[in-house]
Image (cartoon, rainbow, N blue to C red; front, side):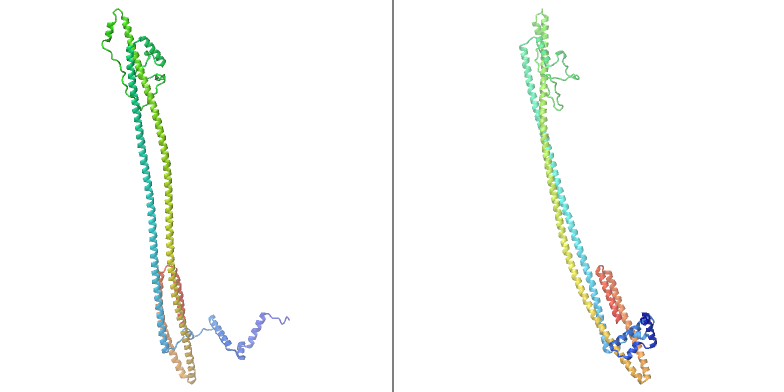
Length: 535
């Protein structure tokens, strides 16, 4: 068992030994010689052999093909006839026609794209101008509304100030009239009291003259009355115009301190007390009546008269002081009444001002509410206008998008048509190339058969024929090269034009369609180069 076991290295060694034993005859050649293989297997074997030879040539193990064979493979020779020449001219005309049609379509597409871009730019400018006008109009309306509100507020404030000024003037006029009325009343009362005092003094003087009494008794009675009333005795009375001593107050008839008159109230001018005029020569008459032997009685009578006059003066003075006290009391009472009325007026005015302030506050609140309502309405109106503008903008954008979609669809249809034409032409070119190749192969086979038959007949003829064929091949190669150069120059000119068009398109296009167009042009160029290489 151990001897029968072989590793894979042993099997390889066995195969190498078998090949060395068989010599130069491989197993496949032996199989071909022994067994008839089918055509499909033979074709596969030939294809495999060609692939191995080509691989050896590429790796350097086998020499490459001769130059002629390579030229034949690269530029197959085509034997032209009258029909093929006509067909070739027709194909060239068709190619030129298709080429110019393609250029025309490209120019139309560029012009359409430019027109569409201009139209879109104009639409965008019109939309921007419309939005700008709407913004300006909205700002102008808001400014006008604010100005109107401000003017209304200023008018209200001015009217309120005018009302306040008129109320102040009316209150001042009313207060002035009240003061004038009060002063007139006080002056009337003072005049009435003065008239009454004068009448009382005249009546007292008349009574004193009719019923005279003892001057000493009257003086004693007057002093007792003065003491009871709190007045000073006649020898201790104040002099007129003297200042009061500190701690001393002037008192009235009731013994109360006199109130000081207010500075603003003017005292009415007092009339001097009426005195009964004395007859001239009265003293002489009395002296004449006095008896000559009684001078003391005359002196006593004179002293009594002086005491009566002094007492009358004191009574007049007291009456004047009483009138002053009454006037001061009346003035104080009137002043208190006036102050009470002024206080009532002040309270009424404060109440009115408070009411006006409350009304102004209510009006201000109402005005603030109205302003807020107006502002809210303006904001709502602005929002409504903005929504309308947005809806219009959406509608316009939708229309623009629909137009762009339709244009893209038309371009796609046009490109599909061009692609279909290109494929059709490519198929026709491939078919024509196959037919030409088949005809060339058939002609080559025929020539080879004729050459073989002629070679069998005579060697010289074969040589001459080979020389003629060689010359013909050279001429054909020259014509082919000239045709190829001409075709290359035409293709180069067309390529230059296409490059110029592409450069112009690159300068004009700015959107994503430009990139897509460049990609499509690059793809078309690659396919065209492949077709040229295939041709």
